[in-house]
Each structure stands twice: as structure tokens, then as C-alpha cells.
Image (cartoon, rainbow, N blue to C red; front, side, top):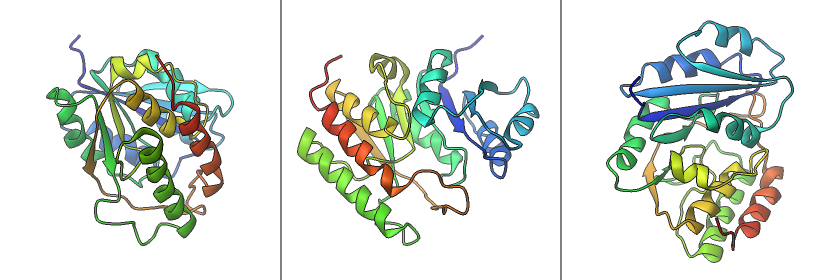
Length: 229
């Protein structure tokens, strides 16, 4: 079997309203892909909907919610692609943009690409506390690591598979993002940022991350400031 270019890992917890469209759009990408969805203990119809895609995607099931980071770590040993991309199970991000984001890694120009939601400024529909946290996270990366990033907390992180495995990820929840950022820098990888679309969703729409998750993000950046592989 031909090795896929791109493994897309989709952590999903109670996303019955959007998961079908997310998977449909991923399957429609003009790229060689492997799609792994982690049903992270969903109690709604997420599992039933994923069953509709039998033999077209791979599904990993957790009996109880384990957290976004833990779900990604569980799926990583199954990854066959040259690079791994993370796709949230909602529609804040446009899956079609993954193809362009992957190209610099496939062309061996870089090993890490982040999708930059803030290329045209902070989204007006993003909650003010979230805007503040995102600004501070980028500033913290600059201070701790000397690297200028515009969007540290973006979901769209695409990473060379072998490089990602070298990180020995320990994350359980949303600290996946700062752990990957810190360890990529510590491994000497250049992070390339490319502009992406972004439509923020609200708590009522099912958004799970909160500005109150910010302390863990900052602590994770500090924790791995001097990490060595």
C-alpha cells in the first residue's frame, strides 16, 4: 500500500452536529490522506455517525473522555503519513486549507507549519479574553524561546511525523499546543506560519476550550523551555 502524504488526526467529543461534515470534507481533499478520528468517550451520536464511514477512515474509541492531547497521543502510533495534521471536529477551521499547509513540508522546505488565524488581525467574533490570551501566548514564546509567532494556539499544526514522535508528548488536554510549540523549537525546527480562515464558535455551539485553560498553556511553555529530547 502506498504511504499517504498526510495523516489527519481528529479528536472528537460529542460533536454530532459537525463531525459528518468534517469527515466528508476531509475525504474530499485532493491529497493522499489517512484520516484517524478519536471518539473520545462521546455520549451523543458521534460514534453512530462515524460508523457511516466504515473502511474509509480509522476510528479509535475511548470509553471515557481522555482529553484532546491524550487522544492525539493515542492515535499517533497509527500514523502512516509523512506528516501529521490536527483537525478539530468542529467547523472553526476549513479542512480544504490543509493541502496548502502541508505542501512546504512535503517539499522539504520545513518540518513544521502552523496555520495563522491572525494574518489579518484578531477575528472580531473571538471573545475578548481569548484574544488577550492569544496575544500573551505569542509574546511568551518570543520571550522564552526568541521565536516570533503570531498564532501559538492555532489548531492547525502540521508536523513531520518522525519529528512529532521524537517529542515524546506528555499532554492530556489542550496543553498539546504549547507542548508541541516548545518541543519543536527545542528540536531546532523552524516553524513556518501560513494564513488560514477561522470562524470562532461559542460555548453554546459546543466550544470546549476556555480562557481558563490559559494557565496550563503558559505553565507548559515554561516547563519545556529547557527540554531536551
